[in-house]
Structure formats: C-alpha cells, structure tokens
Length: 233
Image 1: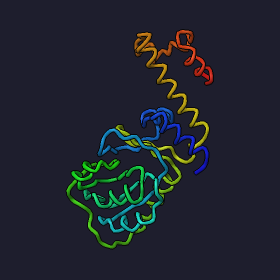
Image 2 (image 1 turned 180 degrees about the horizontal axis):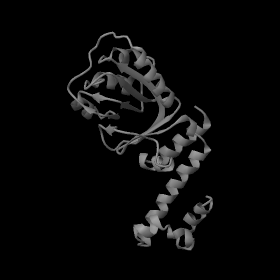
Image 3 (image 1 turned 90 degrees about the vertical axis):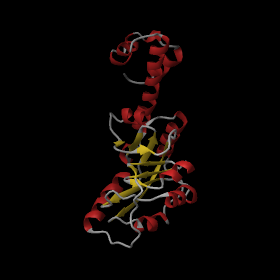
Image 4 (image 1 turned 180 degrees about the vertical axis):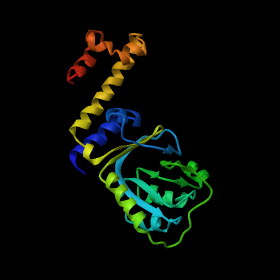
C-alpha cells in the first residue's frame, strides 16, 4: 500500500470521517447508491477485494473468496441473480473471521439475517431474503465478464468507506494529496459550523449559506482561525 493511501485511511479512521463528509469533499460525488448497513454503529475504511457471482449461483463466490487477501473490504458483486441472496452466515463467517476482512459490501441480497445480526458481522447490502442462490457450477457469459471487468476497474485500488449512512468510494485516481486537503478542510468546516451554531448561536443560514465567519474571522477561536488560514479561500 502506498503512502498516500495509508495517509487517507489513517485520516478517515482517526477522525471518523463519515461517508457524508467524504461525499462533500468529493464535490457531492462518490456515493455507491442503495447500500444499507445490516448492523448499526460501524465505521470502516479500506482497500477493496473484488469478487463476483452470477446466473443465480454462488458457486463462483465460494471459489473466488478462497484467494482474497486478508484485511480488505470485500465487495461481492452480482449479475443475473434476481431476488436470490448472494450468501448467508457461513460465507459471511468465512470472509469476516477467516479472511479477517474489514467489511463485506454485497451488491445484492443476503440471507440468514438472524444469525448475521447475532454475530454482528460488518455487512452492507441491498436487503435481505430467505431465498438463496443455487450452489451449482456455472459458466459466465460474455456480458457478465464484461460487466465484472468494468466494475473491477472502478473498485480495484480504490478505497471504500462505509457507515450508517451507506457506502462511499474514493476511486484510485482521486487517491492523492488534493483529496487529503479536501478531507481536512471538510473536517475543519464542520468544526467551525458547530462552533458558530452552538457557541455563537448563529443561524444555520448565517453560518452555512452566508459563511459570515469568513468576513469576520476574529469571531473564531485562535486555533480554528489559524487552521482556516492554511486554506486558500
């Protein structure tokens, strides 16, 4: 893992930077829509391990997770799986415990929700169902392989952030010093906004829309004013 990626992961982890803040830092982009946490109160960030399954079978998934690297955010993709769950508690346990994954992001439904909730596995998915995929050896057609290749290009070497709000992505071409500065600024801006509203008792309009603190920075404490001066506004 390169130094820039480590810095971004460390910054997000230490400051508990949310998916909301990541999206704001990226200019209201970077959200992977539809994902909801199965268990609450989690905040994770990490590199992606991409696997996929297809044609209403999870045989390919069982095969692919054998070789995923440990300590990754495992993105389980699905093609032509309809309303069938991609996996249940056994696969979740294998990935979470024996592959030491940070989280599982399932681009489809999962099952055995009662066990997954009890074990408190860090899973984000599109929902739950009792109905699972079949376990049969299937061959991917050209359309599936093309779609999986396209998704893998987006996800591989990228970072995924997941919390109660959903899932966000920092794609590989945005893993740079510019993004670090944007994340740092978003964190500072949140601190300033809360100070203006909680301590100065300003309205949200005056604080967020007018940004009156930029016209009168002396209202801010020295530490916030000094940090704000580091950014070219």
